[in-house]
Length: 355
Ligand code: PMP
Image 1: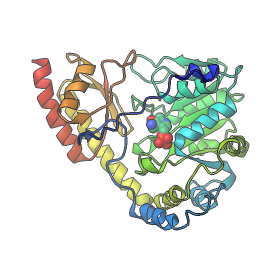
Image 2: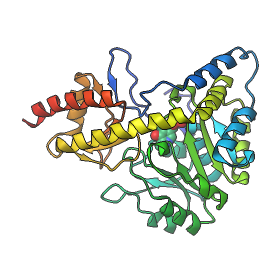
Image 3: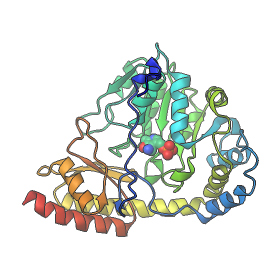
Image 4: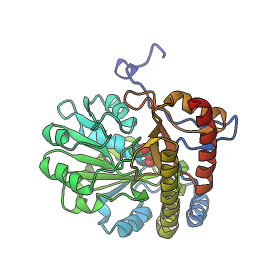
């Protein structure tokens, strides 16, 4: 750190993205990306938009907003787009948290939440998941603050039923509840319909997972129009051109080709269920995930050692050196072929480790 770094930001511990190694070709099951390429409609539209790159992108994202509003069946002023959903999550910390309004989120969840809180000088409280790693809604209802829930939850993939979300939202009408639905398209139920009914609910989604556009950086939030206006204030105070023209066009193509996303998500669900069964067959405990990843541990194998041995064998999974899940590994679900290959390598590694 230079001696010029502001005291306010000197305390930051930045988010650690998953490895993106270039030195060797891995079976990459560590960053929850899609194994499938983007829809051809998305790439064709992005390529066409490239011809107009001498102009700034449309700060209002009018074409994309129009298509998305129709897709979700909502008014245009109830949706905002961002440079990946990370950006709009950061906006939500800026807009809806402060010294007297702490952020509340689970002790095991998306690692960016504490980073955004610290970046924005916002106090936060980590609320423990239950022993089975599911979310306990009660503490969120009982405490003052803005709630951030990833649903399905990050790292575990476990879903909080939408009825429980409604219970939190309706019991805390003077607080904002942010539901981060990055992984909702792999079998979970969305809280978007509830945004019609509650003015304190914000739902965040991304094009990075089920729509195979992680590199395009496209996210969105849906909520009451006043909430969206607040987020627009933050956006216009930081970077109004946050969504580039090519990504906006890719987003339109992806939404128009929804069947492609649904077919791919179906394949992921099938591969996930195969992976769960196979891991359990090898003696692993596996979370009941409705996302495109599972979290797994073996009673007789050290989680970190397993991660390292798999890496040596050319398979990359995600290991978190954090309490409670130190012995677990998060495995992204790829295509069926990728998962069969993963299980074959795992069988070999487990024979050595457990022997
Ligand atoms: N929320 C959760 C729970 C995530 O796991 C991720 C992906 N790392 C994001 C949000 C951010 O995704 P993106 O910025 O690519 O939209």
